[in-house]
Length: 118
Image (cartoon, rainbow, N blue to C red):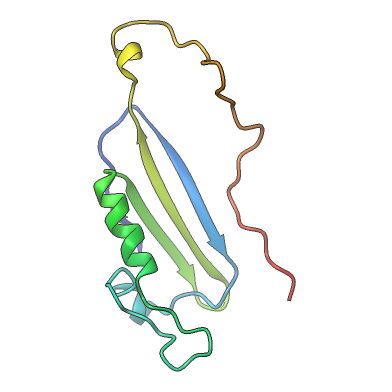
């Protein structure tokens, strides 16, 4: 499916990838996965409400973020959220970017969910 929402224009973006190694999404369902209440688990023990991905889509729209999805049946899916990075007011005014007290930089990037033991 690829990019389903185009992010706002920005100099840089932060990408957050969520990947699972489940059953994947069949091509015939891809066009509907962001519809409210769409679920393929109606008769399953693990029935969902069908609201999760529609909420992600709407939140991404409000944040002017980009959203992409790739899925391969029997291999899993990857959802990518592209967040536009905006300069802070002080950076826009020309002040140097100094680390703020109490802010921490991540020591490593998290790009994949760990596969739970079965």
